[in-house]
Image 1 (tube, helix red, strand yellow):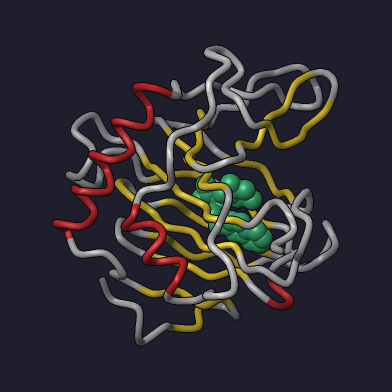
Image 2 (cartoon, rainbow, N blue to C red):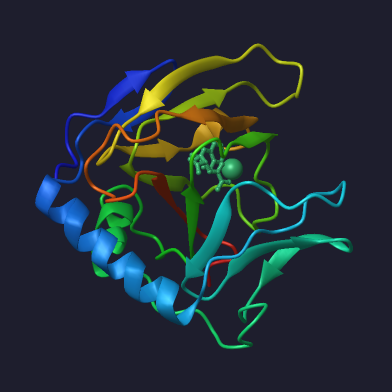
Length: 206
Ligand code: MD3
Ligand code: FE
């Protein structure tokens, strides 16, 4: 795992190749076990259409959305079971940047061909003093980030398999999204697609 040498890409701290190919494979295996006990699902958007991204989680919390709005949940919407523990490798990436407390949520986003994630803010967490740490696996994703207002100008760059990114400070409440993926470019996932892990602290740390 590489944790030194963070690069500033359009104002965002990115660690290119934070995970070796071997580590990416190991993390992917962990995600497959997580998906077995916590099957990925497509949350409903505010306008009643399912999201194109499928999500699941590890750790105490998972993000969820339906007609009633969005919130964090502590049991899987279909199985009613708690989510499995956060993979050790993901925890090690987080701890390279934040040692005050471990994350209590590892969201796993799965992008198939033509999946995207619209511009949004992540502001349902209790303490914005904690960063969000993202790990990309599989096909490249075109990440877009703006400012704290929806109308703020945006800039974009590609995230590749094994890249890690830290969203802190002024970037923590920035609008961001994924415009598209380069489906089938990476050999990591046999059928193509992109996986993204976001490590967060949802509840207040004690
Ligand atoms: C910037 N995921 O799960 S990761 C999300 O690639 C999400 O799946 C995208 O946006 C993905 O909410 C982008 C990078 C990311 C995650 C959280 C952020 C960027 C962020 C929170 C605040 C600002
Ligand atoms: Fe987000």
